[in-house]
Image (cartoon, rainbow, N blue to C red; front, side, top):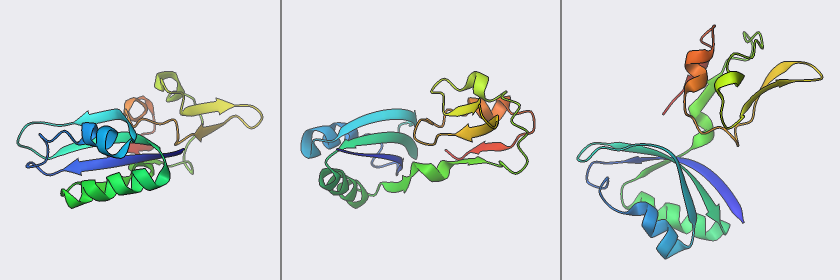
Length: 135
């Protein structure tokens, strides 16, 4: 089984189509919506985690693109300036999926991109404003 996190950007004419149901029904791909900003008649964005056979995920994504949905890897959507980070841990206190951690042996901040759901709580918590979420 493969897993893939993607940011889907829907044009207004596709926002009301049941694309998540289509991924499950037609492509047998488990689709977990991690975050969404969707309004009727407007551009919509959704962070999803897809799980299933790699070939089925690829076919489903190709179909989404044919519908006009822009598909991007989610990993590009969070930036942490670790050169300037002092590893204070303020961001870890608000990170519910525990994607941000400070721990032994070096006590440096570590970002686990696989756990991050791009909620943005860490952005406000960082006293040096070193974290940016592009969603």
